[in-house]
Image 1: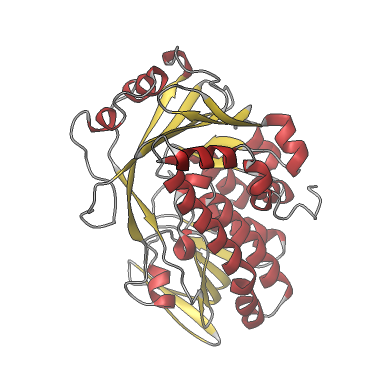
Image 2: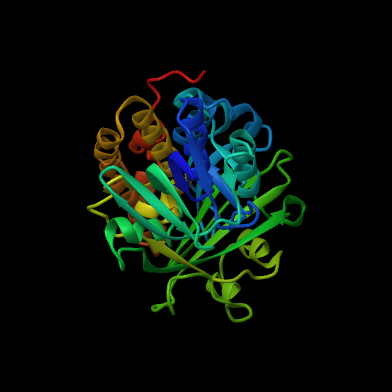
Length: 389
């Protein structure tokens, strides 16, 4: 059994890459460990640098129909609810950056991508146990012992990537950031104290922050992501831990009623470690390479994890469609390494800034937030030169 390109992982990055390769006429197979496509995590925010790629792949309108476009981006004081800074969303954001900003259920996004890719070359329930390769091709061994050979193997298998172990070596994976998060989905009707429920909002305070935004076609659900400093140590980085009862609300004690009302509206979720990938010097080994969280997992405080995976997919697909495999895999990290490192740095720095206590440092932060879209337009405008068809 052989294929020109094999993708390990059927998440957002892997499916986007598969669609892009298929559109370019490159034969591709995707192997996904899960028996069904059901992404972990309630929702995802996609900014213009990601959504413009999806429009160019011909799937933007369908995904737009099941998404919400936030009315504003608002930063608030977590205790007083004061609007520290605000930036327009919706049609104004789209006019500025040439593509929309979406809040979308992860499962809707992943299933929309899977539908566009099709079932024939998507192999579910096919976990990859190991990868081998040389300068002329590569091979994956599945959990059942069978093997698949290809000209190129691409690891899109997330933060705990098997393919990364082959490319960069064991122990090259993500580390715990010292912060953790709780998630939840709340009906808008359960949030009478919440101002501007259709905006994407950051509530900031000492050692914690809350992000939330509406999502779905009906704008009737708010997704929240509540971040706390600590615990200092994490017993492994593999996944979430059950927190003690009331731990989330204790972390936001004394915050504005809109915050505590939201957090109390649904049962407390597990506590998720927030992981970050130390920069990898090697993204490619022979005919095997990496995209997305497998090579540059980053903190979520700029909402760029999924967007950077989509960008990776667009660049790598173009290279594989126009260059020989060796040239493509050499050029790919040259094009992507610097940008993804820069985005990861600002995501880390933002997490620190959002957790400042009131004082001089917070005042400097607030002044900077007033110019957020100007300072970080380079993130959102990426790829704007080519028109969205």
